[in-house]
Length: 91
Image (cartoon, rainbow, N blue to C red; front, side, top):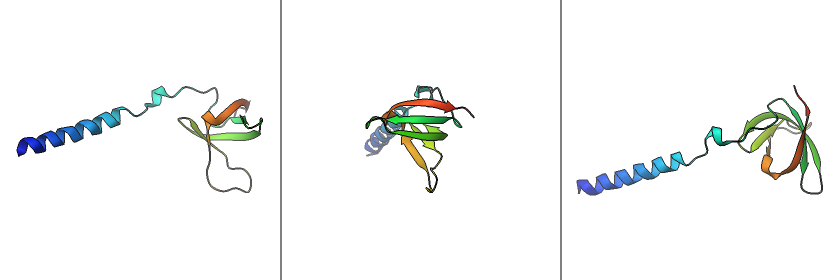
């Protein structure tokens, strides 16, 4: 009976360890030519819609922009959905 519990515990610990080791490490995230505080002009693939964004935080493929006027809360953008961007001003 002890062997069964030991095997079950080892399997659970092994799966848990494998799951933790398969997450993305910060060193795997590519560097960007902009940083927090930069103002970007973002271009979307839906016909070239432009949007201005002052970067406040970077997390993987997401960037948090300063909230537009008359909008409260956080404003996050998935960087992989953009067609392009231009660094407009460094702070």
